[in-house]
Length: 400
Picture (spheres, rainbow, N blue to C red):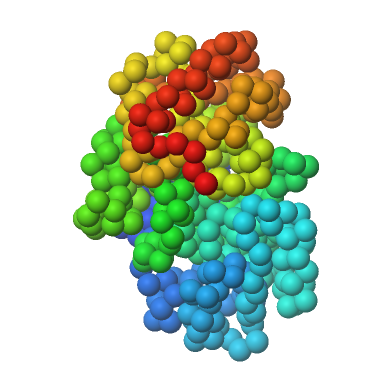
């Protein structure tokens, strides 16, 4: 389960799927595992203890996860680790608490607990806890191991399968961060049954992202089962949810693998992540990350339509699916020409003076709009006007 730089360069890089999960070997030799582990906090399940390998552990989770799973984690650690070798702490969550100060607090608590360079930080929770703890682990004593136990859909299909960590700073999302692979990333699908509907929808936004850019079959499945993982519109067969979950994880890892540390700044997985940072921050995080990504994907589809890169049917299918899931596709407070122009300019600057806006060209296909000049102000204005109309037709307006 360890993440490491592998000495055997004769192995072929790529992603390999097996019954338990996925193994990734990047071209630079970095390798790690992502495992699906039913009953991960059951004291009889050896997966987490095997990942810890007898090291000292300092674990972190948010208050909500503590209420749901804190007792189970403490019981597991008590049953499988040596007395006095572990501590558990809660940290504040939410985007407003995803800060350098919170990461410093994690490090402070780890130091007070006597965590040494051979120790392990453990993050139990969703993407925000994983990002904070992973970044703290990357800094602590110049880098120590950390383990992710992913409890949210976003954590299982997105954050938990990559190597990025980070916190928000300087009024910019994920301004400070590091590429720091987890020593182990463990996901139990049973965690998803206790998630609020809003969090499930946010995870589905990241799944729709992968379907739009890479996999028409996955998109078709989501159209048939837009209530997946939450029982809306009738229960989704368990094997269908397993297919959606595993396919999304595999697609993300396959797309990340050849460019793990983002030496190439044009990335298909950035679909939905050009306009969304400004939608989040300018809206004072009124919309969750997945909701902002949904608005971004809908707007990007309308931009593609205006540029003649995608047909109207595909644009409507994308917006329609997001709306049927219950995600927002338009937000009047932030979807203004001024703010969305700012989003384009900030992305252009962040991506090395190239825009690299990902837009769909069909279901399961996408391309890049690379230059700011390729999206004149009138195109953006027409796309925003078009989206406002389509959002009403889709039955989805501004979300509170």
